[in-house]
Image (tube, one colour):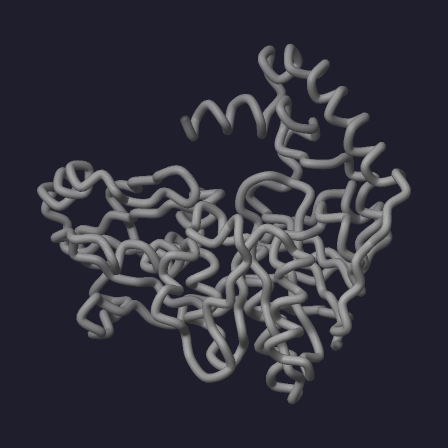
Length: 332
C-alpha cells in the first residue's frame, strides 16, 4: 500500500492523471469554501492553529507540543485542542487532562491526543472534532486561559484563528502537486495566503513553490535524545548500532522515521510500517514479529501511546525525541 501511495500520489503517473477530473472538482469545492461568507466563532483566548494543506504526516503534533511548551515557559496559560482521531471522544469534546493531572480515561482519546496529554504536563488537552465546543469547554473550565492551540485546524473555517502555522515535511513536500485524490494536497497552494508562517520539517532545499508564498519559513528538526526500554532502562546508541534491530511505526510518512533512525547510524533490518493511527489490535501480527528474534524493535512515542496498552512480547525501545524549530518569527 505504501508503495502504491508513493507511486501515484507523490509522483505523477497514469493513475494520478486519470484522477485529475476528481481533483478538479475538489479544487472548486476548496476554493468555494474559502470565499463563502460565514459567521466565525471567536473565543476569548487567542486561537493558534497548527495545520497543513497536505494529507498524511507533516509534524503538526510535534509543532503543537513545541509551541505549547514555549508559551508555558513564558508564563502563559495554554490549552490544546486535538480532534482525537479514532478515539472515544471524537464526536463529543472531552477534557482528557487538566492543569494538575492526566485523567484516567485519556488513553481512549486516540494516540496523538494521548501523546499530547502525556508530553504537556500542566497544559489542559481536549479531544473532539467540534472545535467550537472544544474551545468553549476549555474556556469554561479555565476562564483565565491565554492561548488555545488547535492541532490540525487549518481547514476548520467556522472558528476564527489569530495565527495560522502550516507544516510541511521534507520527505513528502507537496507530493506530485495535485489535489486529492490525484495527489496529497488538501487545498491548492494558493490557500497559503490565508496562513501566517510555514514550518518546514526536515533537511534539504525548500521547494520554490513555498518560497514564492512570501511567508516566513522556519526550519524544524527531530533530535533523538535517548532510547528507553519498556522497563524504563536507557539503551545506549552504541548498543543499538551493533544490534539486530527492526522498526515499527504507524505514522503518516514512515520514510521520515527511517531517515531519522539512519541519521543516527542505526542499521535496521526491517520496518514494519502500519497505516497511520493503526490500533495494533491484531495480536497475531505482533506475535509473528516477535518470533523474528530481533534484539530491539524501535518505535516512536506516538506508537508507544497505543502499544503500552497492548499485550505483546516485543523487545520494544521507545525513541524519545525533541522537536526543535529554528527561525520562528512568532513569539506569542
